[in-house]
Amino acid sequence: NKSTGNIEINVDKLMLESGSVMGIDLIPVEFSETEVSFKINNGKAEVEKGTFTSDLLTAELTGHIKLNKNLEKSRLQLNLILTLEDSINKLAKLAPKMKRAMQDDGSYHFRIQGFLKRARFVPKSKRKERNTSKSTGSTLSEDEKEEKADERRRKRKERLEKRREERKQRREK
Image (cartoon, rainbow, N blue to C red):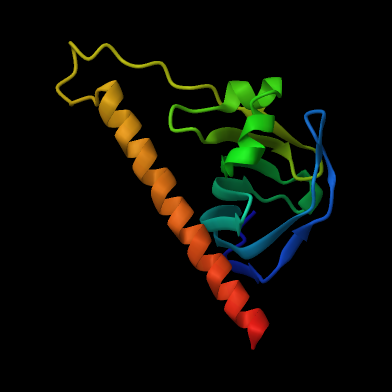
């Protein structure tokens, strides 16, 4: 396949109505921002940007899709990183696949594989820490990791509060 070009998708107020994932019934989720763009070269659609933002979760999409003439048979090699709001995070921790996908920073990492028609979400387990005695790179202590995680949570909370305020102001107009 020699397809080339770009695809860009921007959606305001994308709505995930309901459903069930890994045995957990989902509540409706409205994404305030959705941006997905692909750069296509030689039949391979590489994700340049893939962000989905709501009050309940943020998702980041990376990777590529190997395009097929029959689009449903296009091969997926994508990664999805979810960061959940605290109340949903508590529920997510109960689902076995979510537990396996949980990373040290509290996010959930999935590989999306298979064909476009039949995508599979596979939890990506935490990487095993390398033996640092052999490496020259520095590693963070548990306290430093926790501080970084707290900083990410604080920044995320500030972003969410800012979006809520902006949304409130738009409604008042």
